[in-house]
Amino acid sequence: MDHLLNRRELNRLLTASALAAALPARANDYPSRGIRMVLPVGTGGGGDTLGRVIAEQLAQHIKQPVVVDNKPGADGLIAMQSFLSAPADGYTMLLIGPQPMVFNPLLRSNLPYKPSDLVPMIGVSRSWTVLITSPNSNLKNLEELATAMRKERDAVSLGTSGLSYQVGATLLGSKLGGRFRHISYKSFPQILTDLLSGVLDVALVDTTPVVPLVAGGKLRVLASASPERNANLPSVPTVRESGVDFDFALWTALAVRAGTPPDVARKLEADLRTTLTGPGVRGFVEKMGTTQLSPVTGNEIASEIAAGLARFKDPVAEIAAEMALDKR
Image (cartoon, rainbow, N blue to C red):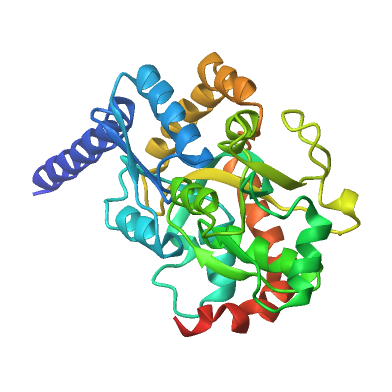
């Protein structure tokens, strides 16, 4: 009888050992198929452009396809739903930023997700925003814009693509002593079309798609919401140069679902770090000149999120009723 029990125990130990040995093997085999990168933005903007370059370079590194899946709209909730509907297996990642991790939690009490549903892996970028208008606009600078806003409530229309930009624009409006008539868009090309047709007065956007259009005479930049002048737009003053205490930057990072096997997450993080610091992505960003690569750790992104929640808590509480997001 004792001999039988010993054999049973031995079989259990052998089975457990086999399972334990199989787990690292599965992690070592990752990735064995394509990875999906969900972007909460439309095509044409800076986030989309950089995301596609990262996907291309990552695919070359891991020898597997990396598919970009644009899911714009609904303040990032469409992208989040698509992301969270996928298994927590490391084969789906989401580009995150202040919108899903800071502004949505501050502005909405009925979010269909929790920030803890995501695990930030690595930072991607940091970019400053600019205030743009049509080259045919009567608005020539920030002072003229402020004057037009103060003259009549909601007289100046402003377009944004995404909640982060909307919050920034609302804060800027309060700094200028007025309020914009906000118009929401899904992507930058739609903003550009309405600016050039005169339907829209101004827009707050990221710098990346703006620089070549300014060089071609298709856009005018009223001000840059950065601490210093942009090297690609040296004649454009900062908002601070106009005497307004305001700057607004957006960061991005890549995240996986909570519950992703740690070995898989670490492998994907390592592959992403190699990609982000490699010559392909670095060369593209340096040539672009409007975005700063920021491959910080997931823990540093978590600290960035905590800092944003603290910084924007009071200002966002003041504008929540105006934006009516708490009633959506």
